Length: 468
Image (cartoon, rainbow, N blue to C red; front, top):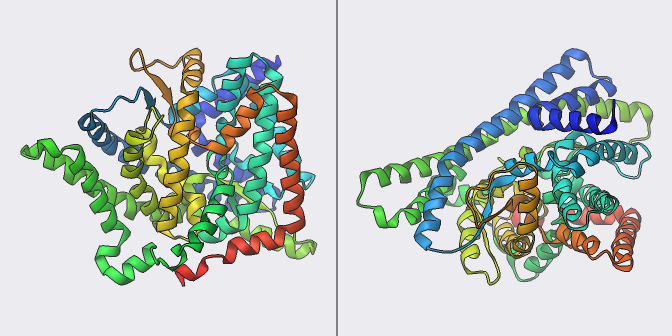
């Protein structure tokens, strides 16, 4: 079999089956390697598949309801933003359809497994190979500009190394906060915000945000029903639709849209935690096997299994932060100088995008919303610059543009300044700049290895008084 045909076959498998099949299959394999009985391993994989499918069903249904409302808001605002956010789903398909994506699939599998087994990292990233499409997006754009496959591959490998480092730094904090023992998140488009999340958490703490008791549990205690995440979803959903249809309030159909938006948003807030509980139960057998093996070996290697970022979506503070950011990001898109991106389909993905901010801040909604608005606002301006190139890649992969004269991109994948900065370093094709970015990684890796316990303890304890 030719190597090209092999990679094409992998691409077809990933793009056809998707995360809901591939991730459970990986979980089953890992469970068997850990010594879990076949029946338990299969049950865990099935629960994982059910959980992921539940996530997708809820988000898909919600997106279908809220997207037209957001579109109406944009129409009423009468703004000209020619870069359309077509969502991470279409972006992932495009990434798996590119030549660079095909080549990187095989490299990613070998690299991530090898780095784990030689103990370069304590994160087993290969269990969430699906999210490698994020690297492929940047690699494909670099290849489209430079026509240099080796440069594109070097970029993706270095981005992968940075993300693995950030994932290991945040692994315990994410695992503890979201309640998935010895599990972590490695989605590149979320992990890249970790350095900023830590710094902004410190800064906001210094100016008094640690004293702001704004989290779902506190809101519920203080305001009763009015503080319930479900009620907050009801209000925010109604508000988004009200703004979108403010000039049609005299029509009965408008109030149908408003009530549908409100109830649907409330439903997401109520249903997602229950789906998350099903997903979490999939890892019970693996966690028990991990503890048993650690006790028998006496080594106690503290390693983490990468799981899909959907696992954190339904946590109450994460959902509230993400839903509040929906109208905030739309407003920012309208007023930010230099922005040409129109947030659309990935607005529903904002609860994914704020997971690092939420867990680092110990569930502080005020911190998470401020941090997200700043980082993703800057990301909108960054993504504006890359939209023409990504549109070229998308068209080359067979994507049909909705209309002429517009560009496409994914806010959830491309509105990320740090990973874009690594891309720019390679785009310069300047050996000194590229070597500097590589050296920065090794310096950060060394410092983390020397100060791992201090950093992990700091993330576990700083700002915790806010939720006491």
